[in-house]
Length: 384
Image (cartoon, rainbow, N blue to C red):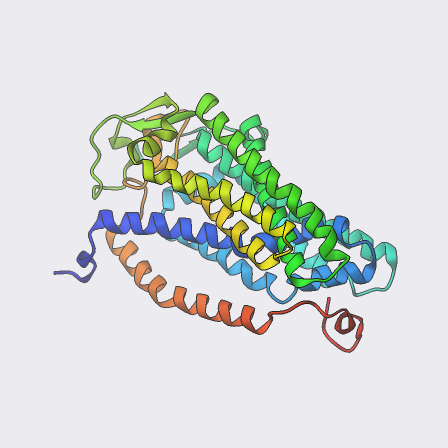
């Protein structure tokens, strides 16, 4: 027996579907608070020292949190090449906008304290806040468009034809999904600031965090209602080999209203996933009122995980539907890399993911505690 045949092809496909979901959740939870902190900066910090305290609360960890984004992009490239090709070419301008936001953020971190001028620092603070908000919004908009499907088709030779535009992505449902993303990550940033800073920054963050947590729960429920009422789902009507070749054109697909709730209807226990999305946000609001920032951060992390995972659970086995050619929709069963490739990268992930989790845990353990304003004022240290 060849080594990679120890794990069945369809099993590996499901494993990599789950791993990509895990990496998305990891990125949203780990980098979400730094994006939220940046977006909240003008609202929670009024003086230069307060802004430096807020920035330095995420200063030691924001770069490491980018690992999850790199891993997620690499996993899609290696395990799901069809999805990588369609999304990174079709959503090119949206991807470019995200890259601009993610590039501006480190520049703002590094340059804002290089000069003493108030105007200089204020401009970089605005750039930092706008970049955090922009990235957060676009992530949600992208998720909303994935649920609706992308306007692409495939030729007989698997050549991709994309017929959408950037402004087509900015439709009402996608913008609502973007607002859900903004609300949940602003909450995450507010909870982080309450954990890592003292008043008055923590007090202001608490006020915003309670509101955004309630908005996160409400907007998520509203998005679910709109998904059920106004967004078409997809359903496979032909037989499909779960361990067959990666050719999306070998199946038949119909567009059915409300189809994204079929998995929940077939397996009612799955309703616990969106329940975590709503319940986690509400518990985070309660924990913030009770001034328990660590509990608020953890419960909001549960909410983020529930919201992200609920999309994958609803769409399974679809990963990126096609609005132009439904049978070309990309699914878990027909858009993956080869059996051997999936096995090799699974072995690599089994080695390196525990290492990443270990050093990340160690870093957060070492850097626990609140930011010290006196250390920020000390010009001999390396604070931002």
